[in-house]
Image (tube, rainbow, N blue to C red):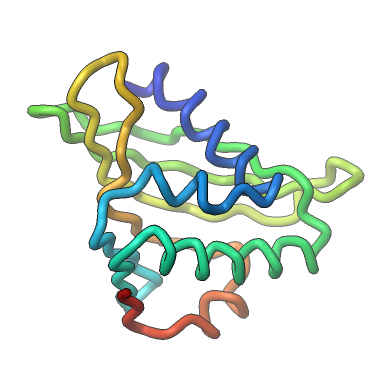
Length: 142
């Protein structure tokens, strides 16, 4: 899965940076739990996640983030289509300087090798923009 997942993550990042947030939200399963340190957010729909992604994108834009690159740090062995994935997201500004890095663990489901994976859970272990995450409600569902 690691070799096939990098293009998928890169596509999500490019869509995010191009403000195609509804497109990004289509690659998740709902309800979708998102852990931020000790807090839990639950997104009940793509629309609810798109709203949160919009706040995160505004924070990234304010910090002059123009590119976000994924680095797969580790991947659990897939079992019946499920796998755990650890990713570091490097955030770069318009001069290509590294500004910050987020560390995220994902639960991914991919039932067929040709099918796009679906993200079923997100766990931020290090957040690039803590001021944005602090503004999000603890439980978000629609």
